[in-house]
Amino acid sequence: MARFLIFMVLHSLLLFFISGGSAATFTLTNNCEYTVWPGSLSGAGTVELETTGFALQTGESRSLNAPAKWSGRFWGRTLCSTNSTTGKFTCGTGDCGSGTVECSGFGAAVPATLAEFTLDGSGGMDFYDVSLVDGYNVPMLVVPQGATSPGGNCTATGCLVDLNGVCPSVLKVVLASANGGSESVACKSACDAFGSPQYCCSGAYGNPSTCKPSSYSQFFKNACPRAYSYAYDDASSTFTCYNANYLITFCPSTASEKSAGDDPKAAAALPLINSTMAFLSGDEVSSGDASLSVPRAALLSVSLAVLAASSLLSRPY
Picture 1: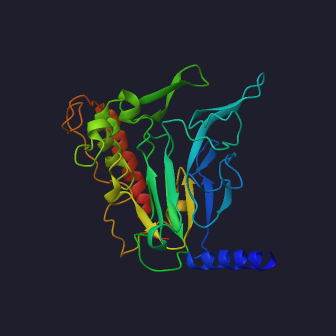
Picture 2 (picture 1 turned 30 degrees about the vertical axis):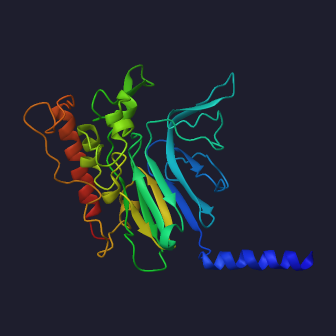
Picture 3 (picture 1 turned 135 degrees about the vertical axis):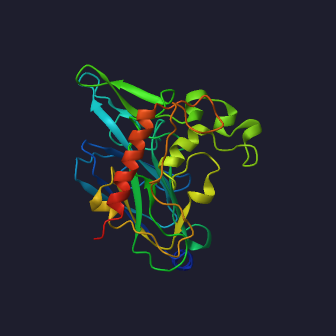
């Protein structure tokens, strides 16, 4: 029995070193002017992190350690509160349905901006992305830090622009505001809004040759070139690092953007934001989908937003 236990310990250690034994630290920072409640969900076969949900006040950060081979996702919940009668915790966007601050194995309700990770995957690389495939609710920036080996496409990604106010009307999620009015708090995906196979990349559209970007997904892609905009947007939206830690910032500002410089050897040529966004003299986006109508003022607002973010990123530090 003793020999068997020794063998198992040595075998586990051998596997640990063969696989690289790497782990990552995720540091989540809230630069929004409001509280964000980050949630996390581990992938199948990987353990949950030390916490699966917590509050971050403006300016606060919290670090979480993930074991080797971990996979999962993070997102930000907003407009959260606890019902004084039932004690149930719910959120206006990104709610995980657990009824508590901890998500405890429940995922985000759409729409939500997602940061997705697979650590120590194929070739020992970490794979990561920021996805708008399930819609958008809060700006997010992911910056890899301290990678121990060269190679990979190890660079920042995310969606830095606040799209809630300029979201196409058919995709907007509108909730009552504290002053008695209403406000746009999230932006649905076309799949969530319409449920058709062509937008959900399902059925006859369940492969990259038949499922193409729509004008709705292009709305997201134009503002956030490196973020996933639809299911088969892999080529410009998946990034890789060796043994890195990751800074995840909600509502990124100069404090987090200054460290988001690109690796000159990185494969992705797309910028974090599109500083050349344009709008037509009419009310519709230039695209093949005539059903997508975005007010000129909204497109101008997006243009101004990305230009402002671009100027922040280009400042010397």
